[in-house]
Structure formats: C-alpha cells, structure tokens
Amino acid sequence: MAMRVAKYRIGQVVRHRVYPFRGVIFDVDPVFNNTEEWYDAIPEDIRPARDQPFYHLLAENGESTYTAYVSEQNLLAEDNPRPVQHPELAEMFDARKDGVYISRTLRPH
Image (cartoon, rainbow, N blue to C red; front, side, top):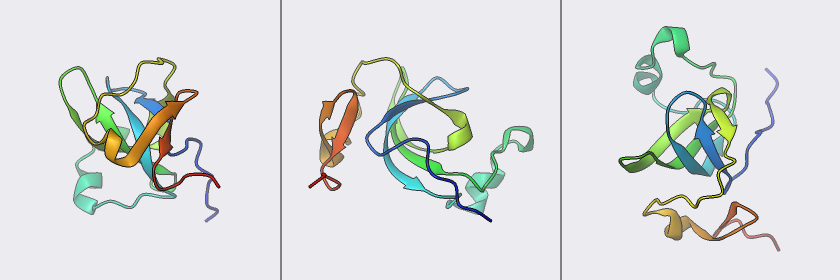
C-alpha cells in the first residue's frame, strides 16, 4: 500500500466538511491510528477509509473546545481568518503568520 502525502499541515486551520467545527492541526497520522472502538463508533455508511491521513485538531464549535481526530476526506481548508479560540493553543503554537499557526516545537531553522 502506497502512503499518501498529507494535504494539510501542522498549524493550518481547517474545518469539518459535514459537522460545524473548525480547528488547528497539531499532529498528523499517515494512516488511521486510533482505537478500534473509536472507528467502530462511526456509522458504517459514513465511516472513512483507514488508508488516508488522519489529523489531530485543537477544535472549537459554537459551544465548546475539544480535541478531534478527523480523516483527510472530511476536512476542508478554512477560509475564515478569525483566530481559533482553544485554551491549549498557546501551549503548542506561537502567533499566526499568514493564517497559519507557528509550532513551538517545529520551528524552521
């Protein structure tokens, strides 16, 4: 099985294709790497393929903030320039540059 290159990058703001939430990517798995219980809890008719990148997000919706795990097929690049309001954001990222959050640990040299 050929490994796909991730479409989105760490620090990028994305939104879910179906559900009303957005977030900042803080980690990427090249293929599904969560529990079977998590995967099986997704209704079969909308369950994503395992052989694609999955993204860890510091997510927000209109009511709360949380961590989300989302397949690439269910994400879209966010075109809203509004900053994400997640309490853990400052622990992982510095200020934004051109709409992308700069990782504290993955700084370019």
